[in-house]
Image 1: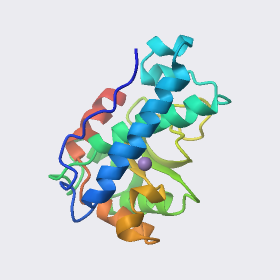
Image 2: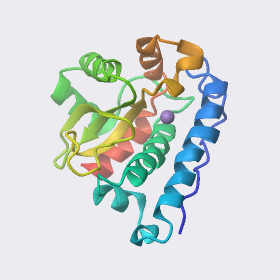
Image 3: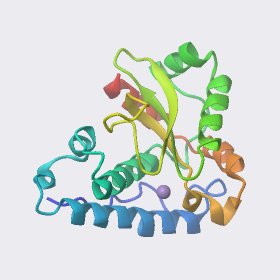
Length: 202
Ligand code: MN
């Protein structure tokens, strides 16, 4: 079995003005496609080629750089596209809203913590909102294409919201202004999808 580049659930220009069409097109059709192809090449003929991506990441040999980087890249971008929407933004809904309030005090405080995690990730990486068994949520960040499903990653839980802070995710439109990109991202978060992932991950 080989992994397929997932289709975007909206057009390349659908997230404008928050994320521009050119960035989305290159990010999806070049970067995500590259991780997908490289993952397929890395697992071809190994015991990993009949596993799901979650099984691969959960049981990853962290010294296997090709699978770590490209398996992470494949999974992370798939999550990223799905937790954004042209109809996104606003505030969290359902039980995840309650859990965010319990953990951070308010949605505004959560935004501050998430923005700080994403803005202070040095170099390339991701910031995450994760749910732990029992429903408690937490924010963390990882370098490169690592993610909270991988063994030994000091993050834990199931990721339900993610922001890509590699320069390829924002540089065309925002150049070095990463915090502006992170602030804009809050306008496209698909809280319905985050809420669904909270329910299945809690
Ligand atoms: Mn990316």
